[in-house]
Image (tube, rainbow over all chains, first blue to last red; front, side, top):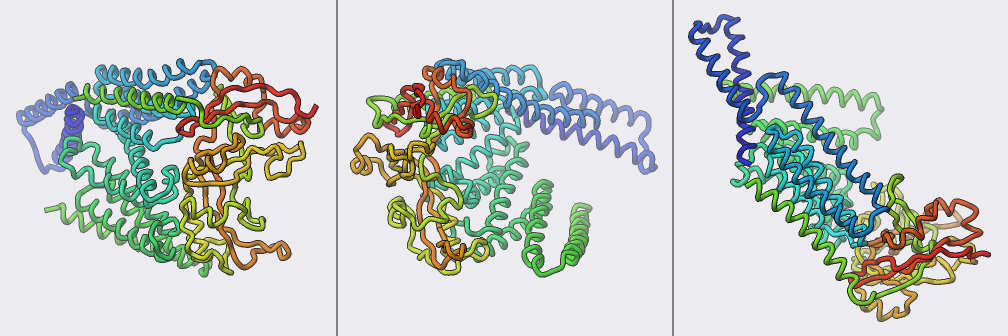
Length: 357
Length: 265
């Protein structure tokens, strides 16, 4: 597990070296800094040695083109994993009818175990973990298939505990290998489980948990808080995923409640509920934007800005669409967008001033 | 550390599967709590996907639920406000209001309050009635002859009230419906509204056909919905019957299937 974090840091170091080389070349071209031949040779030799060491130990990307190809490989690995999951599900469904119950159960139990072993095998052979990531996704899909189909074969009443089992399985895979895809899948299952528990505690059947967005608020807040935990500091590369998923959950729930207060648990008039969540939406999105800029979490700031804009435009729609002519409505929206651009530019300039000593 | 995580993941898979198998064994231990023979009209043949070789039977009952399904009825029937309160709904807010409107932005406080209520779990009593769904069968209807006749929060009192084998007591999801009254003369919403319940879903609505019985149903080339679209369905009637058992956890399984000779001959 430590290896994945070290790899994350190694990649950051390689990126810094690349940026340093580019900047050094630029400074020399502008005449701001000139290194003599001996100095240049010493620096270049040190950088080469460091990069070679990092590449050997962690298989990091040392050039821009390598990095671009790595992105392509990551996308291919995700799509491949999803396609293989679909293949496993459809293959089982295709031959389900020709198997007896013991054979069905055996296939269902063995598939995720074999995929786990395959993930471990791939991870030992390849440090970049593209194949490991792909196989871990198939292992996760196989476990989902396992419990879903066993439930169908034996006609069991659906249970929310399956979400808990899938969530834990995803997290174990993610933390074992430092993989983000199983982490995202596991966290989504755990969010569903928490929401289902919340729904049950309030007297509704767990299956109806998606009907009440408030069921997801607690889970969203927990996800946002996780990167702050001491235990989590060893896995800093997962932090952005926790924050992004947590904020997305919170903002989507608030967005639905601000538009349709009738699905709230709050014992108030629908309009009052909607007003409360509208205020919460603006405050939350504004806070995310501010915190994101302050703590330099680009994803948080972007998500905050995006939802602030969505909340704002929805308000404009409700206030003006019915009585304003269409052309005037879009003109006003356009002018406001220009105003927002100016505001964000000013904000950007101010943050640049803070960064520059 | 990595090895421990992987071993834990493998152990989790095995533990979850053992739990499922034990639960299943527990459900089928002892004698079934209910056994009933139903026909294709009550247990409809479905295939989950085009390429799938799995076979399922879907439990069908009357009255079928759907949005707007009860709009034109005179009243709530047996699933009235009192029964809704019995299954756990809070119906203290008076539903009757003259200005109930279709648009959610303009509907009354009562309409908004009740329409936002989620489903609830309840045991529903389904009566297998030879008279047919809704009492309209004259021997030609393909409607299910399983009719919802009562609901409650626990199994035992309902079983005591309906001890006969023709009553099936099944865990289900029920939903409160807020219905604006309808004036058939003006063909518009009339002043006032009432509450009624609807059985929206069985917790185990699709029942897997075990391999031992698959050969019987595999011979049928059409699913029930495809079969019902043919003129043959009306003339021939249901194609098979199934003995269905319910176990200790109120979960069903198929005991046996047999093909029926043409019912109309």
